[in-house]
Length: 151
Image (tube, rainbow, N blue to C red):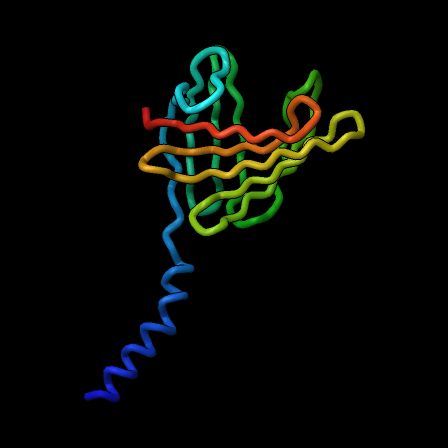
């Protein structure tokens, strides 16, 4: 009996890290509205529609009469998109990877020979979608945390 208990305890100890590393990744899908009490608020309401499946994450952001859409591969491969930004047509290259239950999106944009980098971390906190964005602002890097509530 004692040997069986030892074997079971050992099996649980060995399998625990596997169970922890296989945490369910969050599904960010839904319609979200920016909680303007969570930080600096842009002019006008910001709505975010997220569609997520096993392969891609699509973010559609609407603010006033402007709508932008971006798509990210969820398998860690690069996504290349042509976007209108900073007064012209630019190519944005992004890569999305999972860090536990957080999705990390690293993107670069080439502007007049200069590479701009933007990093975002998406997570769920208490039923809210949280996006932390790290990128250039005012000559240096800045971090902005935005909280979105389910619409």
